Amino acid sequence: EDQVTQSPEALRLQEGESSSLNCSYTVSGLRGLFWYRQDPGKGPEFLFTLYSAGEEKEKERLKATLTKKESFLHITAPKPEDSATYLCAVQPAWNAGNMLTFGGGTRLMVKP
Amino acid sequence: DGGITQSPKYLFRKEGQNVTLSCEQNLNHDAMYWYRQDPGQGLRLIYYSQIVNDFQKGDIAEGYSVSREKKESFPLTVTSAQKNPTAFYLCASSIPTRQGVHGYTFGSGTRLTVV
Image 1 (cartoon, helix red, strand yellow):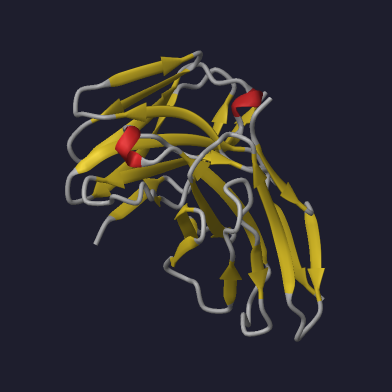
Image 2: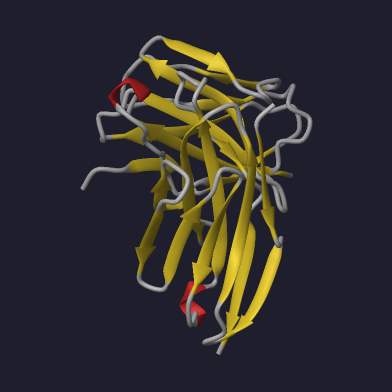
């Protein structure tokens, strides 16, 4: 069974305090791993897609990396506007239906 | 601009009542999905549709029904058989996998509350 586990469940940072969010996955072949940002009461917004181990992608203060068992979302010098829930999802290779399996998310709070 | 529109944003259901959540997309995506999100839990798949006039049950389909009569529309009905419907409901769409690996585009969600 495909599983995605995100840690920590919640993370409090001071503005400027860099940290990382973890997404561990168990899947029978990985087609892609996705990161989304979700603000309260809104739908998730796409951030990154990673396809193979060793791949990295960056956007502003965020950098996503991928290994064979986990992905990290590194946040460098975060600002209060980075506060949100970050969701990780995987698309298994067997899944012809394009369905994603989601983790429980990490709620990030950045204090000024 | 293309996107997914969910309505209403807030919905209140009385005991024993059926309610329908709307989801419309103008992205020309073939695949559409309904997810349920509860506090502290990940997104759980209710139903999905890969093509018009066809849909499949997800992990938690009991108490829900859908239709896919048009490519642009994928409404979700929460029936009286769903005993705990209070949640945040998200609709999403995507390009089929035969065109590569694609994530979802999400709507803004509908918050359903039982009163």
